[in-house]
Amino acid sequence: MATILSVSGSPSATSRTARLLRHLDDRLAAQGHEVIPFDVRALPPEALLYADFRHPAIVDATALVERADGIVIGTPVYKAAYSGLLKSLLDLLPQYALVGKTVLPLATGGSTAHVLAIDYALRPVLNSMGPAHITPGWFTLDKDITVGDDGTLTVAPGTAEALAQVTDQFSLALGGRPTLLAATG
Image 1 (cartoon, rainbow, N blue to C red):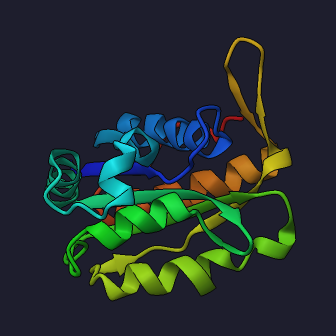
Image 2 (image 1 turned 30 degrees about the vertical axis):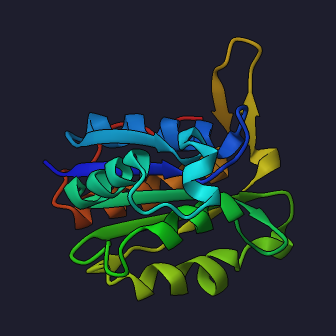
């Protein structure tokens, strides 16, 4: 099966975006893919702040992108755009880092006013990096993602079904097998 890099562009340690990605990672792994979770916020600030292309952490991140067949990119939406942290990473990757890759863009936010951020802010940047295919993405409202006291994630039923569908389409585009798992919240 495919190797998938699952990138969280959230700056928050308690990010719903990252938790949602890890939830979807489990679904992709159950379909037989190797999934590598990657939180951009774990990169050393100096590597991003000084745009140090040769910093070992940036070199390692670039190698992870090169290794992946597919990339899931998740970001919170701030001011109708993807996170600045994600932008910093994308700026430090080679211009055509996504050549030959299949990409699934995902976003979270507090208002439906930001639903077009994937198509009008993130997708053009991803497209400029040369992917073979960008699958349909999904915007999830923050209110549809609940984290319990024990850390369990619950996704509202309608949203869970939609996320399962876009995740499965991404998996199939990578040559995955259809899932037998129910869309779980």
